[in-house]
Image 1 (cartoon, one colour):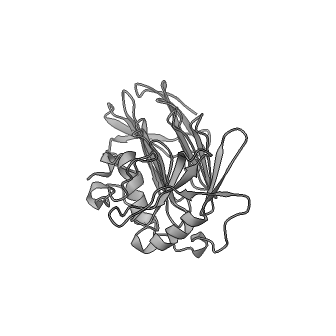
Image 2: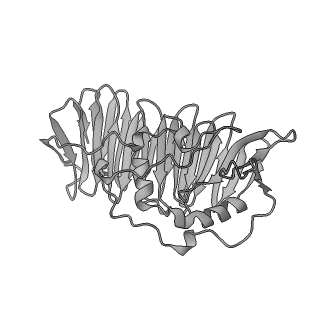
Length: 338
């Protein structure tokens, strides 16, 4: 099964009393992925493994909400019960693939690995992944695909004329679907008064219709059956607290997650990683020491990597390498270069 066909409900069917499937995610085939992540080895930093200390003081604990029997062996699910015994989100469990699955709301799933890398799924609208150090990450959105690995960021911004870009040490390569040429912006050591942009034959941009967040998680995260016992330990130590404004703050494996069911806002802090999303507006923002990227609207996205950056809007896009700024309209015409 292709990763792009896997819905959040296939990873974890949300809702109290609903079945939860933790086997439905098959490992993605490497042949499907034209962007490789070989330069990002699985984390072996012992500081990223679960801490031996007990649960933080002042936190409430998740409770077991289902019971296994001899005739019905099921995965233990932890959750929150109100004073009437009604189960509320979030739901928490250890998957058979050696990850921790946290359902924050119906269709909103956070999958956490023992090394503190994580993958967020919001309904069928978008997925996002980041590894523990922030050097590998992606946003796979119905409005954009942004794939970051090592020194390069591959982008596809979906519009009437799809826009493509690659940000790297060589500069910024960009084009549009209907154009025959691509443009390379690389000022290098040029004078600031002599911006450098070169038209070249349009290459085949490697972004495909697959779920890069899933490929990256399998490629670089610490996950697998050998981590199940650690995941169970993390789940048992997880806790939460409620704020006066209704925000729920979850503490798990050194990650702080804030979730507001009324507004749809979710923030995830796993230093040095920070991610925010909103399930009602389908916006997502990811920031690490290596990259800052966001999908803010149907036509509004941005990516910043080192000195390189690109901003898209309904009227076109602005591309910069830190020295030169280029404005392009929605038809692919260069309006200014400074």
